[in-house]
Length: 271
Image 1: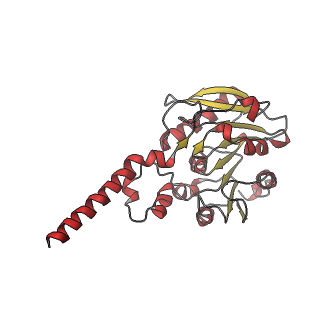
Image 2: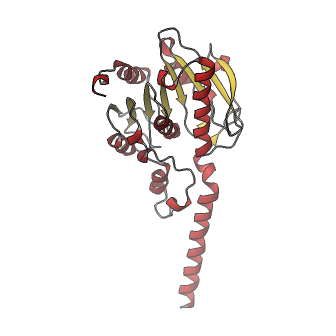
Image 3: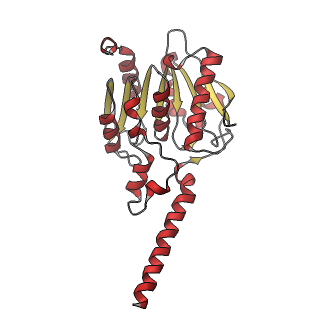
């Protein structure tokens, strides 16, 4: 009996320690910034580097290249790792055809100041769209959001608050809570998690044309989560499924198809 009690106490302590680790280490598990950045001239020729202030006191390192007249402007919300200067491949694709493009590092990433969190990510994105409206005369309804991985949760949140020309979600998840529950089914993640990014609970409020791109060989965010999010989304919507794009390795032709579908406007008469 004593051995049973000691074993039970030991297992309880181990379990509580694991819960404590999950709670206190969750920021390092979710947000993985790097701070050293390459120059804008090297990664995004023709763009300007600016720093945009947020209401929470962050100062966001931002690269912006205006669109040529008649072309669209995209805002790229990158994922949870590294910073804006490590996105050269997607920057080149998203800025093709003389499209305008803005990309920024989240607060606490690259040369942006601040500490990353779910709340600060939303605030960072709001500051970017406010700057575009005030300084560039580009309202949200003029813009297409390209959200990638963790950034898809921010794209969904902002699309519930503002009208956009379209929303593209590259390798999205249903929620970080579900991701954590899948990885740690033996932990009470719903009680422990501070940064939830609950896209599945918000996406019904998104009424813009929405494209979801996902690949079955994505070993970071399960393809099934993209399917579930799509099923919860209202029309107009388009799902683009692949078998060989891994995690966010989408190609120029994929992005072109998504943008062309958003701009086609065939659904406008029924909205």
